[in-house]
Length: 212
Image (cartoon, rainbow, N blue to C red; front, side, top):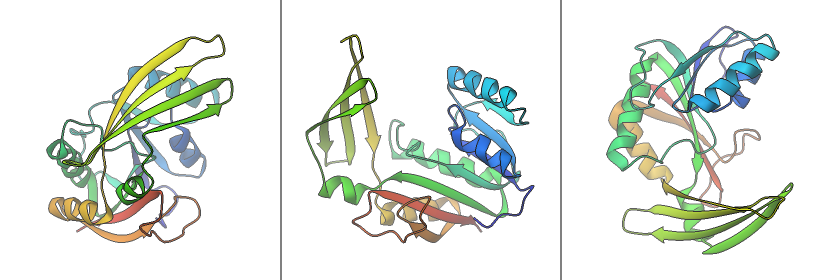
């Protein structure tokens, strides 16, 4: 985003702060917002251990409690699209626009709808450390919701299940809703780390937008 050190950044849906704490170390003034108190408690512990100063707020991403406050807002690694419908997602983007200073930047990183449609698998599994993750996916083409039943088998053979419903966006759709709230897309990437340009074959859709 080419922000100078000392720039004020809101890390939206921050979890335990793996991006936020790295950005503090890089010299940015960071605020983290998340709805999960458990995740924020972990963030506080990690920040204290590393002696890092951060502002931590528990809140709903649809109601960011700031106006013209930040040089940038970031929303990383598919932390967008889990609400009830696209109108609720629109509330999030309106809130982001409100929180940004004029000319402020918004970086959003989501799973690409085009990639999911081209590589859809109804069943898959993978091993992660001592855990086995099984996924059963249902794609609802009517409103492009990807519903995934996740089954985790832990090291003791215990079974844990949870369901994720994710509303997917193509670049065209994301560009349209960003424009609707006053955010203009200035660049797109396939990855937040390598800087390569986005194509329809990219698994991730990373968009940099700017407040008018």
